[in-house]
Length: 271
Image (cartoon, rainbow, N blue to C red; front, side, top):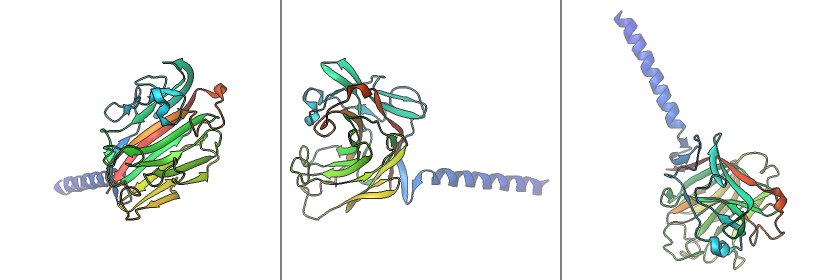
């Protein structure tokens, strides 16, 4: 009787240990721990404990002459269901604009210094769309853009639908000067299939990946913040812009809307 009880207990302990190991390993990425995530396993507006809406640049086109009005807590532009976040750009009259969309940010709800940021997403398509997965400085300690830096994990423009791009912008390297550091790859099905867009960042280097295929690197040159402002905490942004200096370079096809970026998950890992 005692031997049998001990055998049962031993088996139960073994199962618990296996489950604990399994759960722990599910929260790791190589040598990193999962520190922040949204799996979108709910229905409704994006989780307010993790996401805020950025609307502050609506009146001046966000510096890029963009055509959309970014809304706040509007189901038509940002909604979660069926395990996905939908960021949807629409052709409609709203607050003096002809398009609406959403720009979600984790600022002061998810801010990190170094780590791996991973987003699994399917992109919108059509001339005039400009989806992005990117990061900005949270505290702007080196000054306004571009002094405090920008990290573009993924950008795509609808008139060039089969390519995605990664980049960084700093005081020394930015698109205004034409000195930005960037690279693009062909990805013919990015509007039809989900892909994992990821960035790994430490004190020396930023590396960007698509489905774990390395596409871009940028290293600290050791010359100061004008080249490397990436030693401060940053936050994540997800948005679908319409038009703008890049996205609208070949005009906007108004017949394609609505168009959505669908996001399966966002995961952040750190050592």
